Image 1 (cartoon, one colour):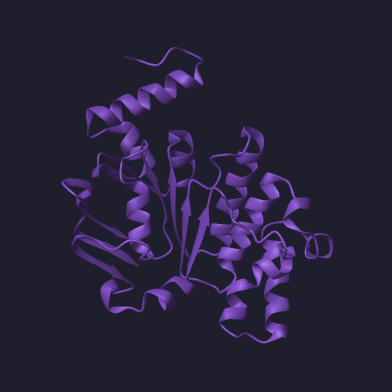
Image 2 (image 1 turned 90 degrees about the vertical axis):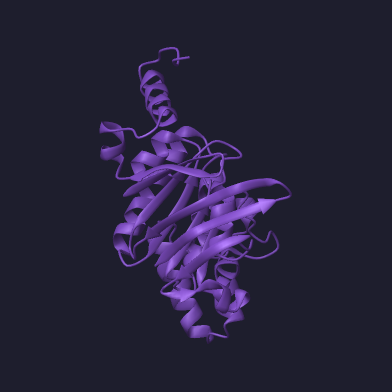
Amino acid sequence: MIQFDHVSKIYGQRAVVDDISFKVNKGEFITILGTSGSGKTTTLKMINRLLEPSKGKISFAGQDLSNLDPIEHRRHIGYVVQEIGLFPHLTVKDNIATVPKLLKWDKEKIDQRVEELLNLVQLPAQEFAHRYPAQLSGGQRQRIGVARALAADPEVLLFDEPFGAIDLLTRNDLQEGLLKIHQDLSSKTFVFITHDINEAFKLGSRVMIMDQGKILQFDQPQAILEAPAHPLVEKLIATARAQELGMRAPE
């Protein structure tokens, strides 16, 4: 579904993303793990052409991304960010319907889709469709953000640290909900950015670990735990285990 061939993104003299190559298959749930400045958000933004690569080639569903119309391309990709950006003056229903309206769907189809998606994110339409964002909790707003991203039935959903500002209990519920949504929509490809190793390993069918614009390891969570391929990956795993035990992280 997504392929990067020797892709770099360079600002001035600095390669924010430095000669990376990888493939994401249709239906995978990929998590990208890294600290601030590791290049993970830049990588994500190149998938939906919010940023263009300085070098290399990106393919999307077998097509060269540079040959696709960027606006049309983005309408077929769902995008969920931490500051979810719901329109405050629009109801939940109208927020979710934003892209279908742009695509000129008829009213009946939109109504049906909104109800279907609200059920999918476990916020029944009867109760939530006519509320405004200010009447929702942070966790509920994030669920609406996911529903809105799914509205036009995109093949790919991109998530940029969507649960970063949510409290731990709500975050856990959202993670479980997102796993269930992916299970229910098994043909959809999810790419999810986080700086939380536990979140990355819980959600990802494969986890990509980035640092300073490079990919340190890209594999199934169990394979990474059993055979970390880089000293920084070893340190990340040791830190996460220490935190679970309430111990001081290793130096």
